[in-house]
Image (cartoon, rainbow, N blue to C red; front, side, top):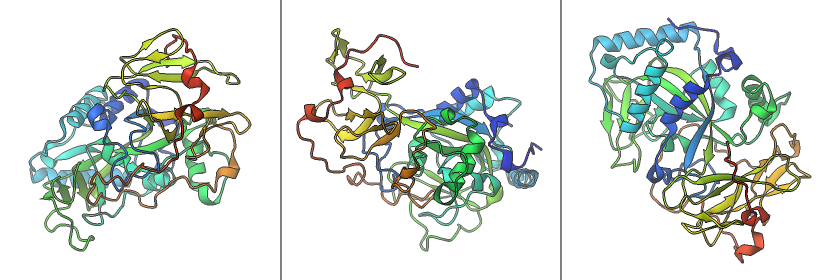
Length: 413
C-alpha cells in the first residue's frame, strides 16, 4: 500500500516534484506544431483566448499526490478484481504511450508499474483551481455527452479545453468567490512569486479501464453507465470529432498520481519551427522582457526580418495583427503593475510581478466556465472560439515599442 498523509496535505511543498520528474511529465503535455493548432479549438474550449494565440503547454510545477489510505485500499482491491479477469490492453496514442513509459521508467521505485491484465492506464484530466482541493479530498466526478462518469484523455489538447485560467496569486486570507483558490495557493505557493501567472491545472491519474464499451455515439439519456462494464471508450468519427475520450463510472477505478500546473505558451512560429527566444530591455522594468521571432528570420542589428514575419515582445495581448499572423505586444502599465492591451480593446491583463494585490479585479469576468470536464459535442471547426471582432485600424497604431526595439542576444530562460 502507498497510503500517505491525508489529501488535505497532499499538495503541500513536501510533495513538490523535482526537475527530472517535471521533464518526464512534460512529455505527456508535448505536441508538435500540427497538434498545437488544435489547442483552444472546439465548443468546449474553456477560454476567451483567441485561436492561434498559443500552441504549446509548458509544465511549470507538479506535486505528487498521496491519497488517503482508504482510497488506496479501494483502488488496489478493484484493480486486483479486474486483473483476475485478464482484460486485453487498450492501445494508446503513441506519443502518450512513450511519455508514460519514460515516466514509469524514470520514477521506478516511486510509481508502480501498470497492471496490463487489468488494462490499467495513466491518463489526463483537466480541472480548475477552485475545485482542486475538493477533488484531492474526495473524488473526481463530472457529467458529459456519454454519461455521468469521470472523463479522461490521452491528448493534452483535449483536457486543455476544460481547464480555467488561474490568473494570479491570491493567497493570504480571502473569502467568497476566491476563498477556495486562496486556500489552494496557500498550499501550493509558499511565496507569491512561485505562482507562474495564468496557470492551468491538470491531473495525471492511474485508471483501471478493464474492458470498456466502445462507442462513437452519445448515451441516449446522457446519464446511464454502460451495462456489464464500468468504463467506456468514445472513439472519433461519431459525436467526437478529434480526440478519443475515456469515461469511468466507478470511482474505485481512479487514483490520482500527480497534480500538474502548466501555462499556455507560443513555441512555434508559423513556419512550424521552434521560435527564436531573446530578451529586450524596456524602460521601467526591472528585468529584460522576453522576445520571440521566426526561426527563419534574421536580425539586421535593430530588428528581425524574413521568415513568416513573427516578431513580438511577450506577453502579447489578444488583438490580432494584420501582418505576421500573430498578436500585438501588450504594454506595461506600471501604475497598475500589469501588462495591458495597447489598444485598450481586448481586455487583456497579466501581472508584471506575482504578489501584487489587485483586489479590485476580483469581480472581473475571468472567462470561467461552470463545468469541470464536459465532453465536446461535435467540435466542428465552427469559428466559434477566439474570433472576437476588433477594429484593427493601422497596425502601427497599436504596436508596442518593444516590437521594434533592438533586443539583446542573451538567451531567455
